[in-house]
Image (cartoon, rainbow, N blue to C red):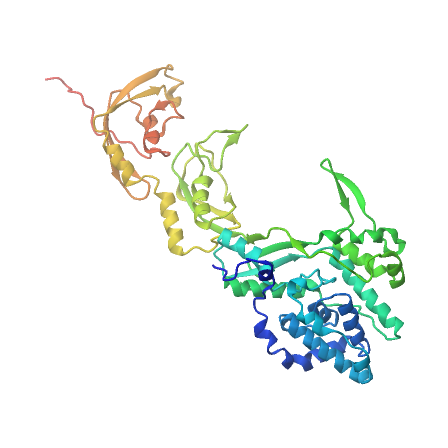
Length: 507
């Protein structure tokens, strides 16, 4: 992925990604827009809503949101195109009321359109989030995160957290509009607005879609979460605690030694605002009509893919491997485990954060798992490569199974001149043999590859050598042992004596 436009100066942040293709056709939607507005608003209130919001420094998208325009495609047009459309809606509404009002009540749309985007007043109802939703500044941090984590996906979904101050500022604007209408004896309720988040998400999603080639979908296994905040209004809702009718309270509680505040959730704030009358709100809120001095900020995006699952069966031929990591008091009692042998290879292929190994039952570390193997599945957490090809999975399976390689066999077969080992009395015969350390010589050893991770060993050893213990190591009581020599865990399936090198009977 490469982003053709980089932020080199302040003006780059305001470049829109896809509005031009919609702005040209927006006038064709005029009749449908008027129908949507008329369904939710008294015609006399429309120019008052528009003028009040423009005077309060609201963006064009927020004005359409307060007018209850439901067509998301309209919001993807440029600010200039939307302002021209708002001007037309305003004039047509005034014509229906009284044509003489058009010349006597004017608004300077030209002044707003002509200013540079970065010099435009900050929208008091969205903190410029909706205004900038499809600009490079909003898309850039998410694009960088996608690029850095290199997720191999085709589509994505968005989870957005809006600044909490938007709740109060939007309600403040509603109350102020209703006051303006009341003063002019015009009926206006504004009981339901278009949700800012539901407009913002597709605008941001379409921008990401165009820049990355990923498809924005309402539901996807790959989710991008981003939290926006506004420092200036983070505690603006606290005035509600002074209004008895709001029923809003903040409590201090202690959790794990830390003091936290509870009660200030978004649903509680919304519920409290609905209980407060306009008269109480105007009296107690010192931000009506709303005003802001700062734009939005954001926390780092969080990219997460839904859990995927990999399953199969495993065989365990060693008595030194635990099923899962065996750790007591910080000490690892088994050098490795089945879950690690499989999981680390899967982690490397799927590039996941972590994994959970879930077997159908268990066996102790000194118990082998033979036959058709034990069923298991692995829960793969946040994989960057969630759907590898079958060929890649087959290759990993072979890599997991092929612990003994031809290179190892070559190294074994170089030991034709023999070597010395030291063996403590095997655990299995301690009840009938005295403890001792015996030095024995392996005269030669020869390995032949069989299928998968099996091989045949031919050995000539000094009399009294414990062959089984040489192979599996007897919990480290034989040094060196075959497992040490090949760098993995080894065990013996069958043992045959081919010959006893002794001239008997004597000639």
